[in-house]
Image (cartoon, rainbow, N blue to C red; front, top):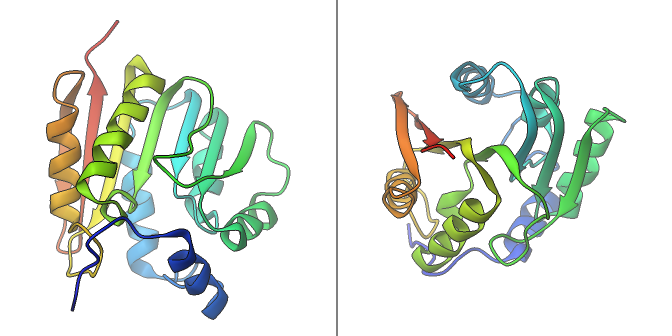
Length: 196
């Protein structure tokens, strides 16, 4: 399998959603269900004032995460995915959706939780460094960052382990690794701000 050398372009995702409205089987997959439950269980706080979910896709995790956040900004690069998130999540109070290609595009505001679930490995190393700068500028000093990545073989620019390890290395000065969960299929890393 030939890996992409650079960050995946928006048309990669547009094509996936055009071919299948749920191309990664987020709504029905036992893997996704269990991973989402583990992600929510790993959140260090019961409730967040302001959260950012990068790569919300069709909104399955978004719907569950929204109930734990006063406000939740959910981003995706594909309009087809965001349309499904709108339909799934309805008019949940505090939920805002934004079409954005990270790291070039980023929402205004500060967040006490930033969730990057199966997205960092779509970026090349240079864009991961730019993503880290975005996260650093918008995360409250005592905020939490949660990374989740499938660890199987991919054709993405980075593997799940490469993506998570690079992000953790790049944030070492302002985020501390709080815990790591590894299963046969994915890894989940919880990082916490080093305080104000």
